[in-house]
Amino acid sequence: MVKIVASDLMSRSVTSVSTEMPLGELAELLAAEEIHGAPVVGRDGGLAGVVSRTDVIRALSEEQEAESSLGSAGIWDTALSHLRNAPTNDQRVRDVMTPHAIVASPDTSAGTLAKQMLDEQVQRILIVKDNDVVGLVSSTDLLEAVIQYENAPVAKLAGA
Image (tube, rainbow, N blue to C red):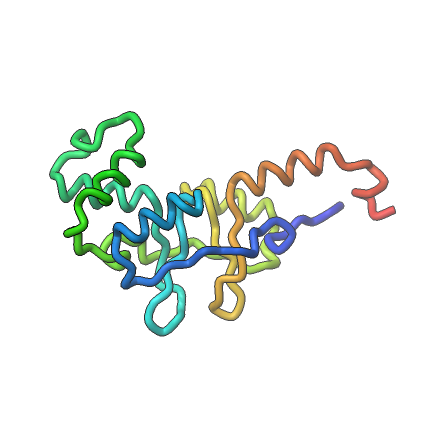
């Protein structure tokens, strides 16, 4: 049986951000890179947590004292527009990030990653080796692996 592990699935190019990055700059980066989140590194270069579009939206909602003020349709676009038009926002990534990052090692099996995503209710897991982020596995990466596995020739899966 073929064992698929994190290092087989992970994206190796991971955009990370600093705890000191302004919230507006973070939002622009997430939009420009077309990503939904990023690992956060502290001043020492170590992993300090994760931040996502949801964290940005939540922070703006709390700032405006009601989530409905951002609107339900196109909430990310509305949040991004708000940050572009409110350059006085002095919040930093450290103010909105989630300090607990969900991590796994490069040799973690795909099944374990999937279970971890379900248990933790997350869409991505950072892959860490020697306390450095070396990659990221998303739920999309796992689904693509299932498709490849189902379409692979039987001889190839058997190691022939």
